[in-house]
Length: 470
Image 1 (spheres, rainbow, N blue to C red):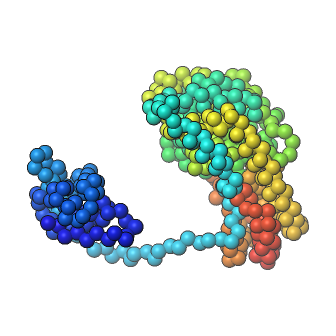
Image 2: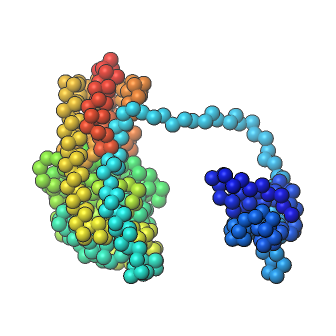
Image 3: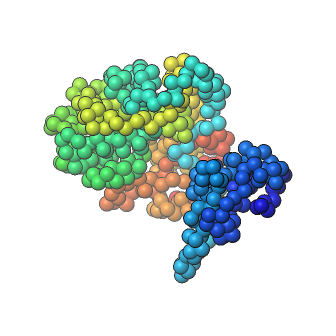
């Protein structure tokens, strides 16, 4: 009989203690191949535990291949013990020292949101509502593009808030914008061949990595004060251009209507040209009215629209949506429709009712007011720098760009702030190709996950940390 010591006071479940003991004995060679283990009944009686406890332990060992169940005979050690004695070759590489994560007192992350305002009670209520006997179909595979009700709700929301014109059939639901960009990269491989994609420079680097990962040639196009420059776009041989016109990431330029029309004219000049419009944080605008989406003013079916709930609700929800022009939708249905939706139907149900029951609109109104207060506090606090800085992209989104009028490098300013426990994020790393002329050191200054007092104190600390660099 196995001599297993059960610690009844341990936080580790008893079945896991039994499982760990037997696995270790097998791996150490103490239980040889084809050794017959005690029956679950006898081992349970010997250890004075329930038979279910031993059943769970044996089931886990069987699933991992450590033991085998022989019908009408019992459980036997599988052929793995000989492999456990293979020793790895000694390595001459010195083990690296463990890296401890640095905790900063002030973290001006441009990627953060105010997670403390997540609508927990509403989410809990909607989660409970979907778990009832009338929703059994939620545990079956749904439509590959996403549930019809969710796509209809998103279509109505996009039309009312962003002027997007589409049917629910044109919408594809996916686990975040990154997944949808990967799906789109595959879609471009069918139909008219696409060899190169133009991107804003600086740009959203994740999109750049995805496109290059699919072996597309990415052509960086510099910006002017209205966004991506049109003449260099014409001079490139790009078939597709990826833009963030409502709040350019990372600089924050809002593309005016004239430049949007010029971009649409570029797409119309040749067959097979497309514009990817990433509308990542258009919900948050603090000055003037939102400019309609590119998709809403596109009359030729050239704009692919991308959006997500990551910034408006929470990043971990991982739900995004893509609106395809009808000609690309036909290609998708012919070649890629076999892909199942990557979003749980439970999550789709919750978000559907979050939108249709009015919770999303109320949440957005609350967050706009909250973020505007933080935004205004940040702009006010930055006055301590007087004429040593300039600010860009402050009219929308959840970060602004702070340019230092200094001869110091961007890294010197980041390092100086870091020594005072202030985490800064540089603009330089977002460039696909670096500017020929040295640019003013620039920082992406996020504020969403900081309190107004934290913002005020953090900017005051930042001023004293970097003033010797100015």
